Length: 249
Image (cartoon, rainbow, N blue to C red; front, top):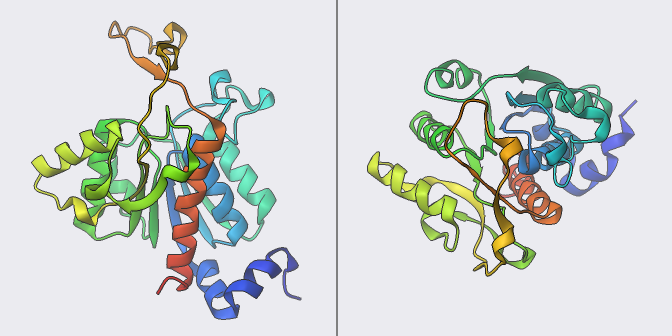
């Protein structure tokens, strides 16, 4: 008997294109505000295998924008929560969790895992640049999320290549670093907002409670909306679904 939970997706894509999703493996790196919503859509699309990467645990400050963050999940590993959610959506999905921090030491083993697509939802500059560089070198298809914080206009969110982004501080920093490494930034497909922000000073603040222990360098926390970060994640997932199913070809 055919599992009816995906009947609407199968009806839209057709049997063969839906079967492509069921055979696909997607790695999601970063299961926070953007990655969590990308995960939600990919799991509900029937992706056959998901590799979920995140070293972090849910904090109360995540609740305003992260789908895995609830009062009942505070303090729990995001990767484990994500795996449980996927299995509740699609018990047939094969799920692998990796509770690791992405850096130069962990990347070789992480990317040794065969995948059809990678979702880059990392929000730290150095790990993000290192990941993008390795994905380009290994010719692994991927989409990166640029900065969703401080943005308020959904109509400005676009799927585009990194060289065409504008009004995004994160994208600008990444462009500079990747160019210095001799990489072709036109090969980096990303979701970014072109919105020119003009917000009150309160949108950028220092949250003493979020500073890593022993770190004397102050880090700014940026305000964000649950709607914008979710749209970033869903836009990435939609592009992955179209690509892997063959509908975009």
